Image (cartoon, rainbow, N blue to C red; front, side, top):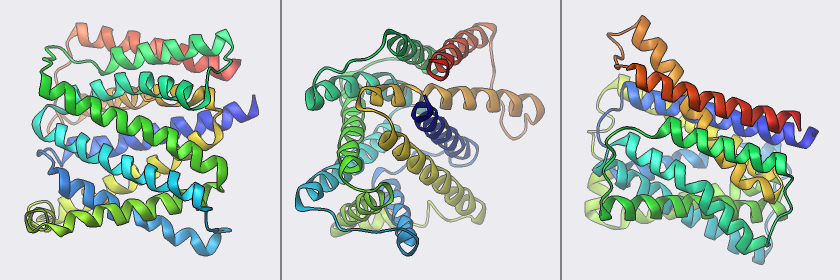
Length: 304
């Protein structure tokens, strides 16, 4: 029970931070992201975790564990790049909804592939189902058109992020949490440096378009800080949660959508000049039903 509370709190905290990062993007960074630029800067910012080295018992991984670290860093970078590529071509609500809906399925299947069938109490299965359904309901927007190109790039991104869950779990099983995080981020940093090998990529990355205004710079840094904290807490949840609950950790992503919906609703009502979105009766009912399902799912996890 105590262990469940720990990884549950870590997971919920991570999605609240992800929600804040998304809100910053929604308010100011509304333009289409440049995949290589965003992936590069996210990778660069992730290296800040090395500042923790003097304060922890930092250790070097074994050669076998190093393989999982490298693989995890690689799929993480690929996941970011394909996600930003999808966001460049398609609406953010469509992309995030598809990735969020398919990722728990991928993680569930990959868990069985790598660790075999997991014995899970019926109450936990019910909680997962409610969280998963709630996440889909709250994230799905109307008029979503699915094309072959859209489906291919979003499914690849979802698969990469799902592998990220699995490979990082292997890392945390063989390495102390902070040491594992630091090594993963070091290799993420190394991989994004490969973007600098091509002149075209360097021009895109160092373009002043992304960081031309001081306000945009500040919000970009704030978004990256929240995203970094979100990744840290999500990794903590993955390290603490039993293998059978990895898909459940991901299905808690619905909390991020709940947070965004409530904050957007409040800002639209109180400060329409900053952010104005129309909420029809149908949308409010849809989101409310989803929130109820997510709250019940959380209640089952906490109370079990």
